[in-house]
Structure formats: structure tokens, C-alpha cells
Image 1 (cartoon, rainbow, N blue to C red):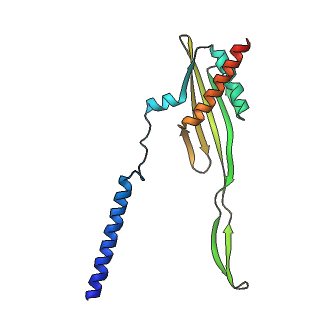
Image 2 (image 1 turned 45 degrees about the vertical axis):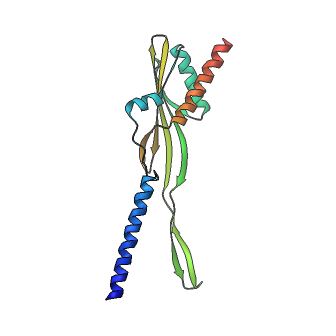
Image 3 (image 1 turned 180 degrees about the vertical axis):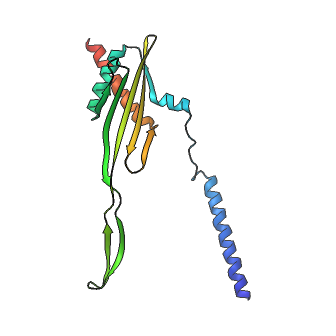
Length: 177
């Protein structure tokens, strides 16, 4: 009976120690989850303005997107909307593998069933608007994944990369004219 009490008390102290460790780690910021971004933050990530004609921004955007490997799927005649699509990755899901006893080889062998194939595309929508002397451009990027569904990207680095390339193209056009 005394040994049973020792085992139970040690077990409880081990559980309380484990819980204390989890609380300690969570207070250190290891499990902190970033708060969702606000609509204003999303707008800031997705938008840029240039003091140039809407036609120039439109041409530069088309040039940059094609250079990055995107296929233009829609281009409105009024030059206010451009839609593009590009393949990001195409791969197979992880194979379902387990170890199975092989009586002939007298050892465990790896037996796998192939996983499903899936693709991830990016769908880009650029909307342009003339506001005073400025052309306002908003870029919305959506990851279209055949396995996990669609997700709007708020990746600041991707948006910055595309915007900086458009800005470079606008600068080159302006200096050569």
C-alpha cells in the first residue's frame, strides 16, 4: 500500500511538473500565435500608388507578371483590371507507409501506398484606379490549392517583390522616354 502511494504521489508530481513546464514555456512566447491582421493592414500590404498614368502602370504590370511566369487570363479594355494565374508547385502528398513483416525475407519491409497528387496555383488580381494625379494599384494574391482550398495571401515579401519590379519598370520607361 505504501509503494502504491509513492507511485501515485510521484505520478502526480510528474504531471504537475509537466504542466508547470508547459506554463513556463508558454509564458516565454514559444506558443504565441500572431493575431490576425486587420483590414487596414491588409490594404496597406496589397496597395501602392504612383504618380503616373494608369496606362503606364497597366503596361508595366503586364510586363512584370509575364516576366515572373504568370499567364494573363483576363485583361479588361478599360485597363482597370488584370487577372493572372501561375503554377506554384505540383507534387504528391506524402505516401502512406508502414512497416510490414515479410516472412520470406524474415524482416520488416517498408510497404507504401501512393499519395494523391495536388497542385498549388496563384491567382493574382490587379485593380487600378486613377485618384487625382496618382494611379492606385491593389494586388490580391490567392493561393488556389487543390488539396487544402483557397487562401488569400498577406505575404508582405511577395507583394513587395511584385511592386518593386513594377516600380523598376515604370522608372525604366520614364527614363527612356
